[in-house]
Structures are given as structure tokens and as C-alpha cells.
Image (cartoon, rainbow, N blue to C red; front, top):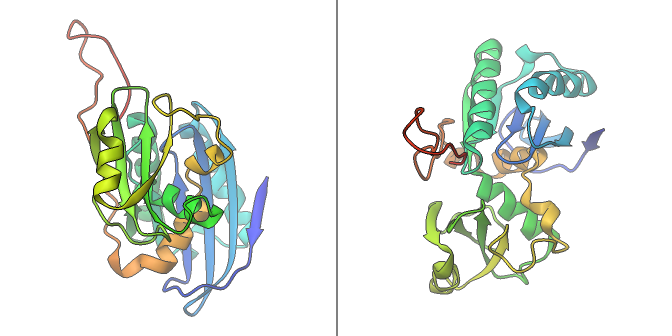
Length: 238
């Protein structure tokens, strides 16, 4: 199901296409602007463990049709660049770069952790404190990044810390830990839904932060774990 939002916000682009495939979902959004005002966002979100590569282009076509645009109308393609699933991150980046090439538009990247931080801040679960987003992908190392209470301003770069060091890392930045995954005691918390990045939040980040955005390039916090045959067990992550 597509969702249509119409909350004006300061912005700089006429039409923005946003994509996320970093984790276990596929999300697409288009932001439409009147000058510097974001006047309409049309989005589509589908949870999925696999299959993002097959769904992303049809989803873009559906959202573009709902928004009443064609690809050549797009002025910027924004995408989550990780950290996340190694395969998912590559799918999103490849799609974004291909669509940007077809549209004749530049790309911009945001971290998946910042998208999550904005979603958590908007949900009001941080009690007005700075936010340490912590994602356990099922291993001993945790992806972390600290943001201000709005989620729009990064206090630290995204990085890996040992699971036992997350609390101290957050405390050193006076931030509240909002974590998700097997290493956290409440994986089914009421705010679990906010740990899947939504492309409409990527549009909001572009609107708010575009002067600080960089071109889309993968953010891999570690090398891929998949190895050639005979070199060890295959794993997935980035």
C-alpha cells in the first residue's frame, strides 16, 4: 500500500526519489517540492527477508505513477548506504545509481542509523535526550551511532563496538541507548517497528540536511564475511 503525506518542510529539491533496502524491508518514497517547500510525499514500504532486487524497480514505478511523475522529473536520488545487510546495501546502492543515471540526477547517501534515529525521535521514545542507535545483527559487535534528540544531527560517525561496551559508549556521549536485535533484552519492544528504515524518512533527511549530504557510497563497517570456497563459512553483513 502506498502512503501519501503532505506536511510542508524546508527543502531544496524539486523532486527527490528515496530508496532503502539495508535490512529486512524494501522502501521507496518520492518527495515533491514547491520551491523550497516539501508539499507531498508518496511512499511504499514492504517487509521482506529477501527479494529486494526484484521488487525495487516495480515499487519505484508504482510510487512514481501515484506521484504523477516520470523518472526524468527526479532531481536527486537518495539512498541508505549502510550499515546493514551487505547484500541489501549493495542492492539499494546499485538501484539508486542506475535510476540516477537514467534520470540524469545526482545521488546522496544517508546512514541507515540516522534514518532510524529520526524515526525514534519522532516516536518520542528518547525522552528528549540524545540518541544512541544500536543494532545487533546477530553477532558480538554492535553498529552504533549517536545523534542529537531530533536525529537530524550526528554526534559521532557510525562505528562498531563490542556488545559489552555499548552502555559505556552511550554514557560517554550522554545519550540514551535505543537498541534492537538479539543482544538486547527487549527485541519485541513497542518501538521495534522504527528500526526498519522508511524511505519517507530519507526524504525528510534530505529536506532538512541536504547541504551536509555526500554522494552515495557504501558504508561497510567491516569486510564482507563471505569467503571463497574452502576459505571458511559464508556469512552476510556489512
